[in-house]
Image (cartoon, rainbow, N blue to C red; front, top):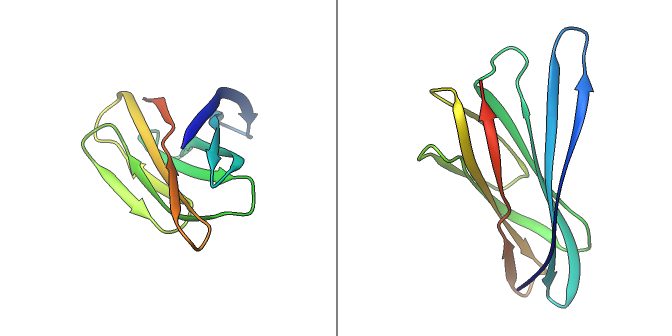
Length: 120
């Protein structure tokens, strides 16, 4: 797997009461001879600032087989879908990794973007 590009984007989302910053990490990878864009984003739950929702996405014809979220506090979770939630015990800044496993029916390849998540 050849990693080609890395981009971080942030968009401010306004709701009726809460402000939330939705941050996305994107990575272009060479997987099975295809250049694919994978992304990993998070949002903080408006009712519980220690609960963070994570989402993994990708472009292309391959399927996401699984995503292993490593939350940076010693906890991890593998999901067969693309979303997961985690509640942190304490406020702080955590280094979170999403190991995204893509499959084409014949084999798999992985990409593992890492991002910093601040919990209040």
